[in-house]
Amino acid sequence: MAVAEATPPPAIRSNTLKLGLLGAISGAISWALVNYAETLNIKFEYEGAGVMLLPVGVFPGVVFGILFAIALVLARHRSPLRGLGYVLASALAYLAAFHVAFYILGNIGHGDDGSMFTYVIAGVPAGFAGSVLLGIFTRLLFPLRSWRVVARSVIVGTLAGALLVLGMYDDHNGWGFLIFFVLWQAAYGACLAPLLSNSRG
Image 1 (tube, one colour):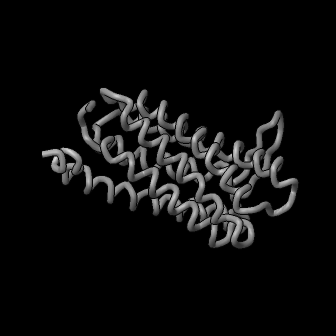
Image 2 (tube, helix red, strand yellow):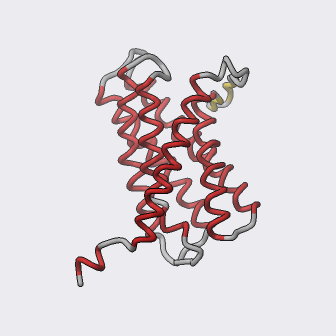
């Protein structure tokens, strides 16, 4: 009985695979938009009042938000306005994570390429900041009876933040960052599987 209770229902396992794949697709699209921003004429740069708006700090959150908003709205039969709210929440959460990582890398790395430890130290709190923000907004937009899904998403998002270390193994926005975006967004997306249920549980 204990084993049966510990095993996720088939529907949850199926949704985990689906959202994990959706997250991987989101990560790949995000990397492509960042890497080819100049070629696609979508490159931008703004800095002011401690805020930096760059393709690498904006596109991943927006892409993830759009794809998962569509999935959640369709699965839970919610208003498109909630989907729009999720896109904005995802963009804000990722922007926060980007800033945390950027400033930690800037202060600890002292302007050089940093070390593996430096990237982990930057990625973990960045993942925590982003997943906490998105988790709170997700629960408000797509209500559940408990905070279990939110807690799981925070744990997964925080641990997956350590994958930022992959970015140190090649040039800026190279293959390391592609693998990082794919794995991070796939892991975070997979843990949202219970949200595909139309119930509030």
